[in-house]
Amino acid sequence: MTQAHRWQDEVLAGPGGAMTDEVGVITGPLTLRTTAAAGDLVRFEVQYKDADEWYTLTGSPRTHRGAPAALHAAALAAIRAGGGAAAPG
Image (spheres, rainbow, N blue to C red):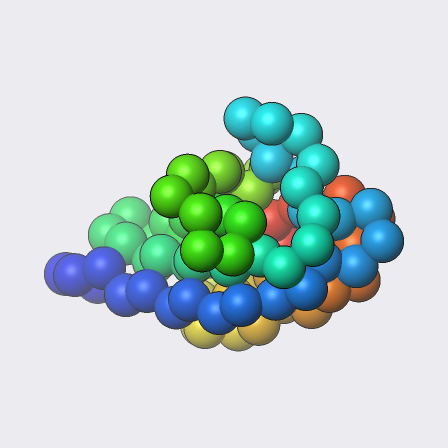
C-alpha cells in the first residue's frame, strides 16, 4: 500500500466504553478514526465527539490480514458493545 487510507465515523460507546492507552476508558458519543498505512498496519484512534484530542484505542496498531475497512467496521461494533472495547484483531 503506497498511501494511507482512512475511515472515520461517529459511534455511541456501549456500557463500559472504549479502552484507550492514554486515559483509560472513555464513554459517550465518540469518533473512531481508522488509518491503514504501509507495512500492513492499521491504527485505531478515538476521541470524544467534536473534541481536539485523539486517543489510541488499546491494542493499536494492529497488523491487518484482509480489508482494513472490515477492521474499522469491527472496531465500531466493539465500541457500540462497550465493555472496555479494544482494537479488533
